[in-house]
Length: 271
Image (cartoon, rainbow, N blue to C red):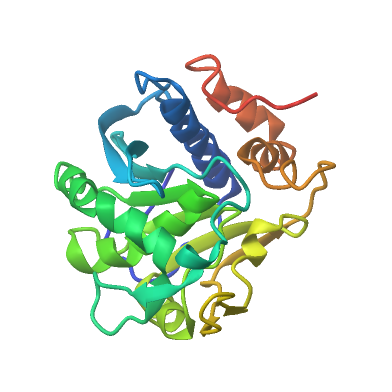
């Protein structure tokens, strides 16, 4: 992944090969979670800096991602959720103050609670990275929401003032003030969104709590990259392997080259 130095403030052009590579990295966040010992595959040329834990909705500590580095770039990857819609219930679709940056607006309480539980561990891992290399932040689904919450924090609280963000099938994260703050602080965010995926439409633009009747407003951050694929089900239109397969169709030979080593590290594509 080629990138300019961290001092670059201009937005970087969309690179579909970078997107394909990062989607494959996101696939390993699920592997890390599904393997009881946390084992997963690291792409050729990269090494593991460390993994991090976060508190899930039932307050249990779970593996939620990892940091990789190579001689050219570093990657912070967040895991998504097991289900497409298990985060829209009332107690988590409320909003809370985005605490890492002052006066930056309100964000989804459920996503924010998870991110804040992982924040210290993530920032410690980033201190181990050489700041002259570009930092890519990525995630699918809930992981895309966590990547978004992390990005503005990282830009203001770490040596990486210009993280480069690629997310896939991410839900909305915050209110209009947060989105405005985020769009000003983050130069490059490419937000891949399948038009037939329900998750990027959640929470709804205007969300009313069924319990308190309080109204919350949600917007997407910048950088939408519209994709279009139907996989025959709500889940199929959302799962990471579908996003990966869609990107592979744009550049099959590149996908074959990066997926060869180590064998099996890319998401499986259904025939």
